[in-house]
Image (cartoon, rainbow, N blue to C red):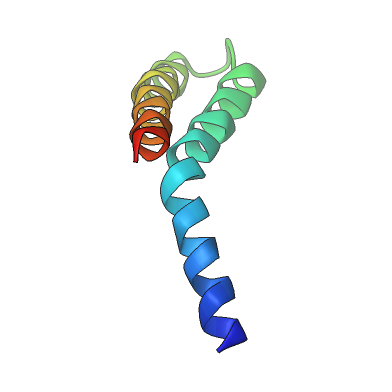
Length: 65
């Protein structure tokens, strides 16, 4: 019973903050690889923008519920 409750809380948090964590990891990789490989930098930069906006909209939707 307790494990199911913890698992449901974890899945709820993952749904809220998953895209923001991916965006943060893309941002860290963009900062590290800046200037070395411009293709990778631009793709990860787009990932920061797209995943960041999705994460913000997910959190807004969760707050409205």
